[in-house]
Length: 135
Image (cartoon, rainbow, N blue to C red):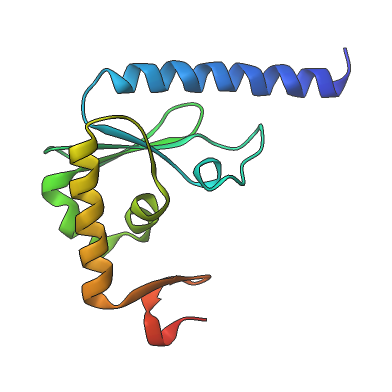
């Protein structure tokens, strides 16, 4: 077996594990998003599966899943999270709804858009900055 065959098998196994995780998370309620390079179309077979689960209320968590990270984002704390984490801004800017509560996703995305608009933020290679600072 060649190293290319081994890499292919590893990538396929990770893909299967990611699909199982997505199926399980889709059954838990909330709105499940894919973000990061895979959502932006720049991923490759070994890219992480970055997922975010938006829930109505609860604790903010970041979990390692074995195939990537899972961010659990409670809508009732979203304003606080947007103010303290560029990752949350990135998730809501790039996130693709995989399954779940579309209304919950749209509510979170509307809060994100309002937050960015009110502060005049733009995404730059340095992260989210006020429009006049963009590089």
